[in-house]
Amino acid sequence: MALMVSQLLSQSGIAFGTSGARGLVSDFSNNNCAAFTQAFIEVMRQGFVFDRIALGIDNRPSSPQLAAACAGMARACGVQVDYYGVVPTPALAFKAMQDKIPAVMVTGSHIPFDRNGLKFYRPDGEISKADEQAIGSVCSRLADYEPELPPCSDAAATAYMTRYLQAFPARCLQGKHIGVYEHSSAGRDIYRPLFEQLGARVTPLERTDTFVPVDTEAVSEQDQQKARAWSARFGFDAIFSTDGDGDRPLIADEQGQWLRGDIVGLLCAKALGIGRLAVPVSCNTAIETCGAFSQVVRTRIGSPYVIAAFDAWQGAAESYAGFEANGGFILGSPLQLASGALAALPTRDALLPVLALLLAAGSQPLSALSAQLPQRFTASDRLQQVPVTRSKALLAQAQAAPQQLLSTLGLSGMQVVRLDNTDGLRLTLSNGDILHLRPSGNAPELRCYVESGHPQRAAALVSEVLSRLKAELVQA
Image 1 (cartoon, one colour):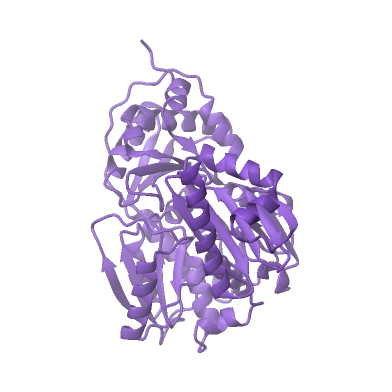
Image 2: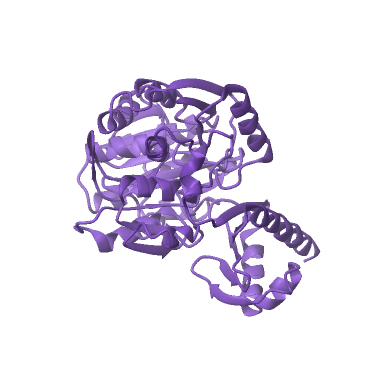
């Protein structure tokens, strides 16, 4: 009996979220990976002419097997595969855009170890939500294929490094001491040589062969303690790390304090002189109140929504960009920097923010940059293993009766002065605090974001809200 692509995809247990198709490793059978690849190629052929695709992976143990199935199906579709092995997602995307070919990145990013995913790129950047729907609707018979990886090339990693070496001044990081928290990041073999070629002294930290699911929006207490200890021991100017696939930065200042991703994005955009910004609704309101940008558009959470906002700015004289609360910076328009041109890279990138911040700081400590911003502080965390259906039901109840939610959360003394349901439920309270709850688009998690005028208040409120929500969900 012939296997149909659409049937395989609908029954796979794998779904598109805020960034790519994600699911349990056990769901990513050879046939399911092949079906996604065949559907992707068929959809891309409707708008582009190509005879090759680019393919990369992260350091998860399951990723090579998934990639082999993808590569086998690409060949069965008459498409050659440029395989770049373990490489950061933005490096793969950049090389594919240079070559004007589609790309597939096998990565689960920051999600738990028992999961993985596929990210898809058109020759001109990330696929859209419309592309995702088209991929899921392909009705072809699954082609015959043999899973096999081709030889690996380092051309994507080299092109990614060259992008920054040509755009930033030679030896511009002279005198900086940077700690690189390598863990299992897909870019860990790129960051040290790049920083060193730009003049920095680099100390590698805690490289591991065991996959570590670093989430830049919910930095563990253990990683917070590590950063403070490393800074005290080595006297770093900054510590740099990323999530698993290297598209979200994690940057600590000279005190070992990890900077929030939306603050990193804001500082990067200011340093680059960006004119217009698109950011998710969950980002810090200092973006508007700092007065650095001519226009700020708020979107749903997820890079496809941020990138979609760029459509209205095509051909604009002003530069434009976006970023997410996780720190991934999305350069929508090309820039002319003092030392060279920087091509647009419309996907999340971790390297541009750290380079921009270090240069903007100059001889100042990195903490001085954030101290110059309006003092609004964000904190976030998540409840894991919460089914999306349960999260959505809770938020539907809360939207119908927001004051009742505040009472449940121990905030009965507050009033809701603004309700925003752009993505999840975002409540602005009478004391100026902002509380935002939403189901994760990538995993069975309920995320909580808080913004306040005091950092301790933001952190404490996230902890209290999640504690009360956990008790509420247990009782339900």
